[in-house]
Length: 363
Picture (tube, rainbow, N blue to C red):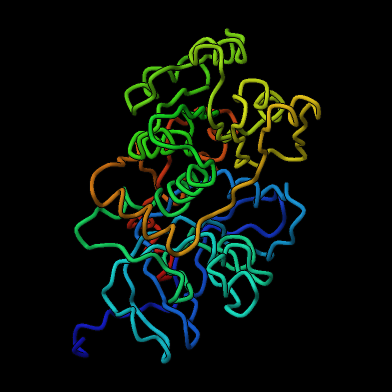
């Protein structure tokens, strides 16, 4: 890129920071980070908000976080600076910053293309500052490549939500034409999972609160079960001719669905745990699990190849993540709505600042 086309990178920016778990979220001016030799600096235009971000802020998980911390890990933006070792990402490229910010590259998992299981990962918005800021650093080898033809606000939810559910559906080993149950089908992950399931050829049953029924069916679910008014186990069996579902994708943010899943999963089926309710456990009757040959497994985020595949579904127009757009300054309100289950689909935050905030920064 000619020198006159190199974007000017400011010294300071706006971001959302918290000093302690559950403490105040402070929208304030902070320094712009510097990329290392194998990193890129991304001007984040839009960032999705994930339940993981809420857990990170509250300190729900038995994993140490960086403090103070800028959360967020669904950032879509434009590369504005690259480290001296970076060769295949260029200034002006559109990229996505994901949960896995970088991996060690030399452990058994990294060398077998299972880098999400790396023994020494760096996690965006958890162990390193994430995407709830205007400029974010990420490892060049791990950023998602985004075509300039796709809108960055719509692409943001694919970078974690879309990738996570796509990986879970792959892990289910379900085949086209088979039935997959998706719990939490009306939520941020669920609305993506329903679409990926349809695009992958599965027949889908969504489970969620009744008011989300129409939205879930419009996205591709053939049947819907209202967990508030229906017997979930009997309803799923009824919709599957008494056999149960070939696979269950557990995206719920409460424990009960994790205890029910094996009871409506058909023999030789697979239960895939994805959601991470705080302090939750999954249990199943041993006799029934053995004689019906039920598989219970976890699914984490996807690899770089999974990312490429998940993005490709989106680029081809097969996935249209329902989302609402807010401002980065409104993150606290989004968390409140998320905790109350008031969000259907995904929330995406615009990182641009108001003229008033810009004046404050310049002062």
